[in-house]
Length: 308
Image (cartoon, rainbow, N blue to C red; front, side, top):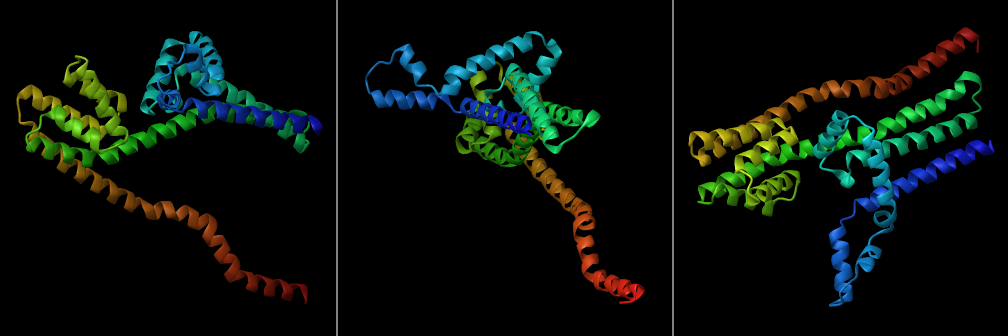
């Protein structure tokens, strides 16, 4: 009993420590450094002082995790590493993750939940072959949780881009028709909105300022986000540039098409709502309703048969 409690306690402590590490990794470093610099005024900080100004997780634990991640990545196939990198990019690089840190997170989660499953199995008093169910289930769950979390991040970010696209296209259309160039219109979108789509447009502008062709930067933006509506819009812009068609007319057509598709998607989701409500009603509402309606009758029938 005491061994199982200690195992669960250690697993929870390690899990909490990992959470604090990645919570600290997600904090922006620039703001912290600017705050420290403002605090010291004109005093020129040394490299050691700047390092000490960083959070403990960023200063001490992050290098350890990076070394572990590099060690694991060096023994991971290149196609697997590239697939993880693509998935992290689709999720918007949450917590500044890299393929190595994601694999490290999966390994730590696997070990923690395996230990927790072992302690839970001992706590429940499982014996024989049943004792392996706790560690095995915990290990599988620990390995899958980071992947599930990344997949949810990817879907949430793609949904955010899909929702923000019609409004961004409206602003692009108005700006271009008012006489702005396409790059200046994109800059207006990045200034007005603060979402995943605006961040992607900001990256496109930065790449074009560094000398990358605009059409190539836009095409790369469509490939790395894998949103159908965004890809259709960018391909239309690329074709208009190549064929010499007016960009304002293309933007207006694409804006109307985006709003039409969003309305169709809303109608489709509304049509699916009754079917999705059926299963909770059958599983939760109907049993309680049957108990309320038929319970007294069942009690009376049973009393008559028992002779009460």
